[in-house]
Length: 138
Image 1: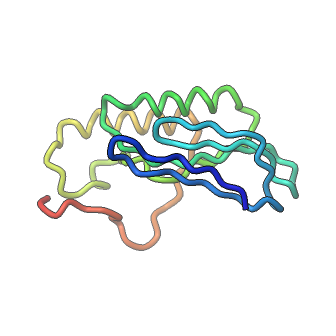
Image 2 (image 1 turned 135 degrees about the vertical axis):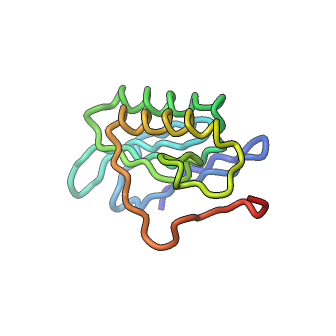
């Protein structure tokens, strides 16, 4: 197995990404504030690809990570891309329950949807529980 670990700072969680060396050759990686991206080749298909693991502690003032990811992706458009992890953002108001700051959700939702559209991402449907986290006082 190959792996890259990015230690969290200022209360953010660590990010970890790993791959099977007999299936994927990792040529390089990039660490952003809220993500790790690995670049390489799927050995069986020879497909050049990038895998991005996101663990974001976003608020509206920290959406620069979305721009960083967009810039990295646009510089490597010929590659296949996979984004996974926790963006800590929602696409629709119905995806978040128990939040009191309803006004700020509109800008977050618009920004996150714009990021998804600009990068031609496809969201996989949720299977199982609808919410993975909740605020007890919400």
